[in-house]
Length: 367
Image 1: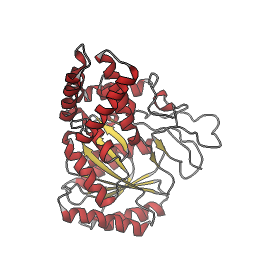
Image 2: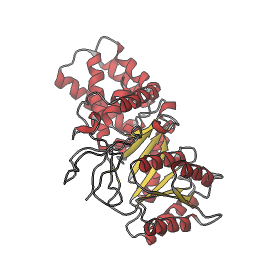
Image 3: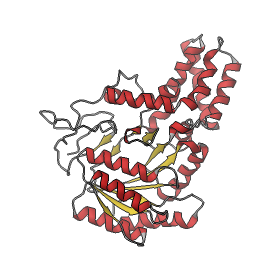
Image 4: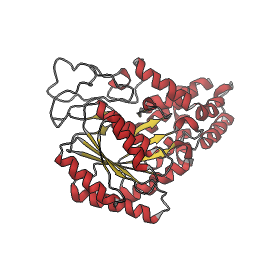
């Protein structure tokens, strides 16, 4: 039986499990689903109730007040998106809803790297909402824009599923500097805190000190790591998946080399790693994640397209949204390559990587 567990990076303290475990999983929009050791038992860290921000079945619904841990995250998200949002929100400081307002908004969205297709979609949707609601004040238009962005981004809001396979093999890719290995470390901490056993595979043999960096995260999280000195990354990945199965681990995280889509030989190596992992487990990899740097704007969209063509991505981790005025790229991804965004990050701290929520993002963007 698969239990649905809400897991957020801000939720680290162990809590007592509820007195009874439901006989069937609750139909909720959770950020993460997982069993513990393949059993229908409740991990010590299972919250006694879902946070209000994700308790409703529809993520597009207005959310009640968040618990303190989530509220702290929302405050950091608002601060992180300030560079992107300030250019957009200044459009609504006037007194009239006219063509000039929409033209200024179009420019602001394009500057935020929302992309042409997503910008056109949002403007058409927004004008319809303004007409239907008979809005007369620019501040009302701002609220309607938040609704439009939420609806656009909602398809990206999906849970990372753990437990349908044992172990769940997660392959992680990304260009150098995107924060790939750091994100893997944070994800490892997240999984371990949920009572899941994790095995790391150091398959990044291209970047100097990558294995050492991953080993530090393994030590911090008290998890095992499979690493071959000077070995083939595909062979190391095979060994890790095989070891994960033999040792009964819940998750195997494979850290692959950072690379640019234009580096053909490295992209071919990624394909090889995936093929070899499938030899160790015919159903693997069960998740193929790409870590992208929010600072890169439209280049991030190009990376998503290229890596998806090569690997068939199942999810994204978007980092460094706090250092950019290009946070609109999530809208571009939603319109042109709607691959789920499992986590977003606005800093280097452990708690600065969180589950993605479309409504929260839209509201933070326009706060």
